[in-house]
Figure 1: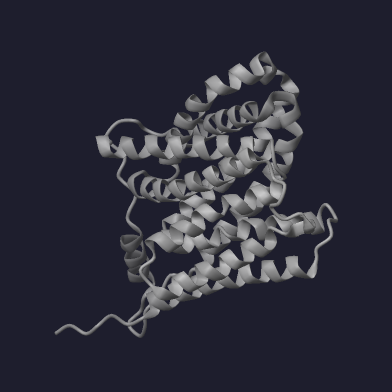
Figure 2: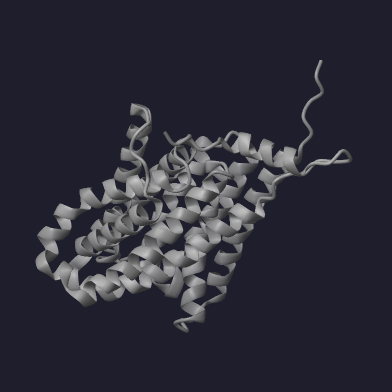
Length: 317
């Protein structure tokens, strides 16, 4: 029976105990998990670019099916998760994690089939921002969330288009994807605490793939099995699912959900920067200001969490 993964508190305590000498204490640095989150965001953006090439072939639902199915196969082969020894509560968590992944991916790809990628990502990121406000118990976290939200709103004017004229259904689907993204953060953290390594992610990905399969078959049929389409689907799966979901799951073992949710606001900034550097898309002064606000909010959230960890414990009575 696989042992459940240790809680973040237990892991931090064990790490400190192993690396602490008589003269001082070692504290976990937030830079590790932050780097994981940023790397995940970069991987997602390249995966989204590749998915644009696949969508004309198999449609939005077909892309989701290819992405989730290929990711599930890769993760199951690599992780080879055991299925025995878990409680009903553990399996309930995994199933809901899979449901949120299927919903998040399905709604998002339906959204970018109707509206541009930039506004879709900007609307989607409102879900994690709302989560950070809803679950935060510190006033400073509300401040950082508000600052990030201001940056996201400014970034929505990228290219001068704003949200005016967007297809209402596409915008609603992007907002729905944001809601599922917030739920994904919650269940990803729970899964990471209940299952070792990436076993829970592999099992949840299989659930998500099974849920998306009927829709993909209905829309694309046998086109899903064309060699070229399968190859692109594997690329999308690795960049958009396998790498980022694994990195985020590892990060959530060391970061609280509110801080992680605010860091997710970096996604539109990463997308805008990639457009400028790779696609040579123009960036206005307003765009630069928006990115600065989002990055400042993310850095503030991390610093607040770091200070909270460094705060000395109250003396025993």
